[in-house]
Image: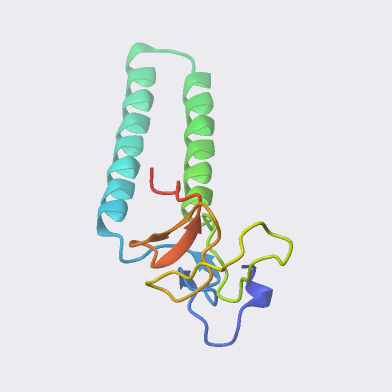
Length: 133
């Protein structure tokens, strides 16, 4: 949700509808994997720079590699901060749908659309549940 829609006092990071940016803060394995990925990218960047200087290669190698690393980091950050398709708390079934009954999630007590599942990490129902795979 863009910051100009945020409610006063709403948390900046989180998985609630009031949060300005989507980020699961209590996902310790996910945060460990982010740290490992950033560490490996930093080490590889150091290795490419060192080998380029040590072997006298063109400095264009460093430039091209750093552009690719930057694009990779931006893509990773955008993926981490984007909503994976959480079902809104006020969502309701369409009246023209084929289902005669509304299904309600047993954990978050909200409408559960077809093919959605409750995510224990995000603590919300997610459409198609493919965001942690």
